[in-house]
Amino acid sequence: MFCPKCKAEYRPGFTRCSDCGVDLVDRLPEEPRTGRSRRTDSSKLVPILRTHDRSDVLSIKIALDSEGVDYILQGEIMTGFRMGDPVVLLVREEDIHRVKELLSGIKLNYSSQTFNPNRK
Image (cartoon, rainbow, N blue to C red; front, side, top):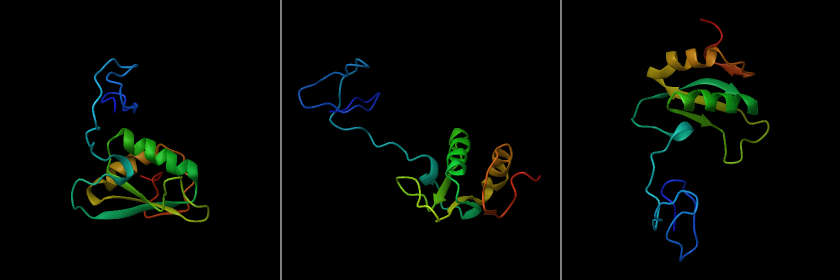
């Protein structure tokens, strides 16, 4: 049993969420995927920058997720990423200018990029 509001899982026998006060459901509805793996069309994805820095990955995720930008961080794994392996940011071609603007105000320690987000 699950709470449809807070997504908490309950043992069998419970019928209401103790935190939210709503009725539990047998399973949660599938939600649209967001962030790094969201892809709503067949637009071509292009690499924007490459980094080995964990703080870059976090900063990129926060900036792009907060603005609803579709992207993929190639090389990132469930637990972060392996040291030494680069993470490559890929975005849709039509989002390149917007992503460039969003990242221009963030201090990143990227190792290479197809554009310099700090240059206009």
